[in-house]
Image (cartoon, rainbow, N blue to C red; front, top):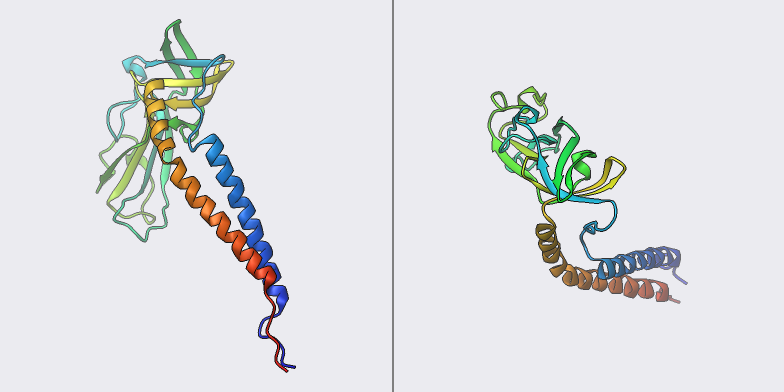
Length: 223
């Protein structure tokens, strides 16, 4: 009797992996279907909504757009550098203690780092030199990046709308934009939810089918 080319244990392992993958994909599919794809905009107690206010002396000159109050500036590879490792230089600038004009008066709150913010997107520009630009002229990127450089900014400026979830005098969630803008952006994201759910569902089903096939496999035997 000839030995089978592949021992059945391999297919059992593959079947188990496919079964686990199918279960994971099913969980993600259900989560996206029930909860959607975007972060929940906070409301109710402990929420501050308003407009950022600041004196001219508090503003920081930006390499991307107008001066800002607080935020993060990054330097990375431009879109032309397809083979770049993605190394970047970043810094937080400005005062994290933000003043917000609300319907009940001005309130002051300390923000978390910009990497934890949600809402409207970042600003971006490309440049062949950093030397004459505010903030990024101090970036140490020689030997890691080649021009042109991509500069991105996630910042808050006077007049920007914000929705903040706060505990005491510190923000635990920051949404850039008015509630109306954020709701519209979230609705657009939700419009793409069901195609994603469908794709994940098909992937989960295929994983279960493959798992079943692997568990049913029997090596052919030759006398």
